[in-house]
Image (tube, rainbow, N blue to C red):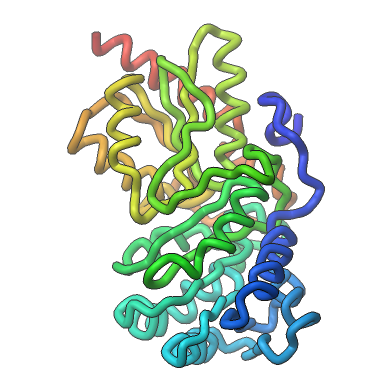
Length: 326
């Protein structure tokens, strides 16, 4: 069964990276200050849509991520709005010092796009998989961290990034994601989570492609009499503390699902909020301290327990723990 099918979500035929490329070109057409800096991967990230129409605003810096970031920061200081684009693993692992000093500490207005985040990069293998990117950028104050869950959200985030003060990290993906939101009416406010399904027994908090998986899991659990709320935590900084605390208080059990290492990822930050506001049983779906081998993206998700079935199993365990606590 395909992602989102059990929840009845509408399919999108374009990989999310293609959606990013289209959204970036739309933004460039309407904002002459937007420039794109590429790490010689524009054909893969789809940032080269801008090169084809606005070659004077597209700069291929080559396989030199530190220079990529430094030049982008300089352009931001000159009043332009740079999108600094490469694979998430390359940017965060190769150019962390430059991102820290020239972007985060300087609090510049720019968007760093980490493409091919997570393990669904697939057959290109572990050297290129961004599985620690959210933890790394999460260690840099001043960054707004955005993880789109569907094509409509990607469009909204790209369009809205220049309006966010300070640096933005935007995660992109190689795979297709179904539509969760209407294309012409996607709710996006940085720092405000979206509840995409109501429920009283459990809350599934997810980001990225795991939101659709969470909706599939909620449909499965509903057939067993467990009504799960599903929250799209599309902004990992600033976190929606109020929505997370309310979910814990109102449903009494949580599952966090992310295509990322559990250490330092979304779930660990949600847990910090829950402990401080309303402790409840929690379960976590993510990568457990492991590097993933090359393979088909969907086979990898199954092998490493990042599927709707895994979220549903975690949900059953959290609800059982809640009942035992009573």
